[in-house]
Amino acid sequence: MHFGRRRIEQACFCLVLAALCPLASAESWGLSQLMAGFAEVGESRARFTEEKHLSMLTAPLRLSGTLRYVRPDHLEKTVTKPYVESLRVTGDRVEWQRQNRTRTMSLRSQPQIWALVDSIRATLAGDLPALNQHYRVAFEGDRSQWKITLEPRQESLSQFIATMRLQGSAQQLRRVEIVEANQDRSVMLIEDARD
Image 1 (cartoon, rainbow, N blue to C red):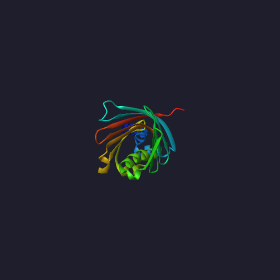
Image 2 (image 1 turned 45 degrees about the horizontal axis):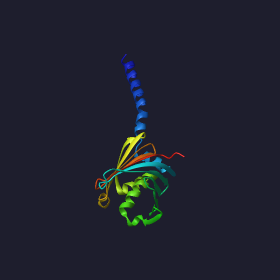
Image 3 (image 1 turned 90 degrees about the vertical axis):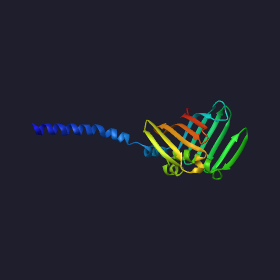
Image 4 (image 1 turned 135 degrees about the vertical axis):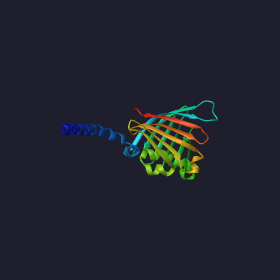
């Protein structure tokens, strides 16, 4: 009788262990898997709405438009409302266009902007070492709902950016919040582009 009870206990233990194994593997999904998924994306397009909360304005500035990323280092942000402007970054070159005027500059001459742009590109490219170069990276959540918090490592960057929070689901970036050192902040919501 004692032998039979022990076999039943072992069988129950094995069933419990087998039931927990899928949960353990599902919960092991994390920052490395997220970045690996991002690294597989060659190009993406999306629509965005953005609210900028600036201390010099009495109400938030609301923008909308489109975003485009082409691996490894091309970003585009086109604002269509309430005005029209575009910002294109390829490599270390930034091109800004508004009211039929185009300006270009090198990101290398603006290290703070370079670090900010690099953080977005590194995330979209799935390049965790590049992200770690400028920020302390904290990850929480799972495949269905995750959040990355970035805090600047260098004082030169923390004078401008207090924190960045990126949120999404699977390999979809859905929300970007940037809190500046002066407490101005912007919140961008991102959704798939529909053709």
